[in-house]
Length: 268
Image 1 (cartoon, rainbow, N blue to C red):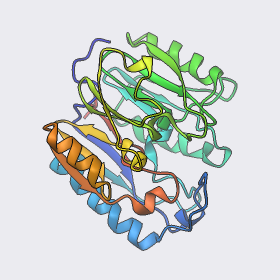
Image 2 (image 1 turned 60 degrees about the horizontal axis):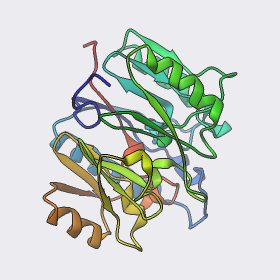
Image 3 (image 1 turned 135 degrees about the vertical axis):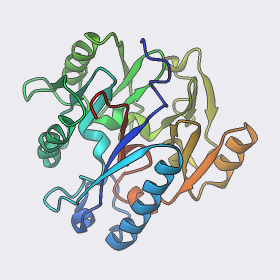
Image 4 (image 1 turned 90 degrees about the vertical axis):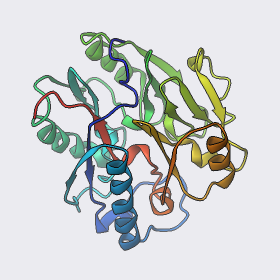
């Protein structure tokens, strides 16, 4: 890994407005449909939080034919040297990758992609740290996809490490999130994981596991609202927190990390 700040320092983000069809979005457990209008309002708050953290945000219109397309992070992985178009594990999301490819040519000259015969990888399973790219093997990311991704990013000098996502957890980042250059917020299921060796681990208080899907953007941690114990813990540790409403996103297995694709572009 050769780029200090790679994991948390960003100048640019891509987001896509939630569609009305978000009510048909994928979910591991059905806890009711999200309110599309409220989701749209919450998404605006999310964009404002990114901007206050120092990121220039490009917002793209809804894609009604892809209910889950608001979760743009699942379709690509970006580095200063280039981007990889991923292959989401859910068949209904396959078309999102091609659309993302069309967008990223404006920012990157070097674009790789996970091809149809190379398995599948969801961005929600990828945690970029300062030392390695951690990839959780899950229902949405398989070994073949990991192997392909590992080869593609090696040319830019990045090392990928496969991690076994805890049983019953949709994505690796459902249970963890970077909160600093060498610090991670994690649930009890991952708090002693060897993949975080050498990093500071802050364990999410029991009962607030959903809060683990936080993101560090420059010097700010974007944390889902509604988890007071986690908020208090992070503030006591000295972290600068911005709370964002994610209740609607959570109904379709979404959180802070998946609603934006954050990077440092090499093209203007």
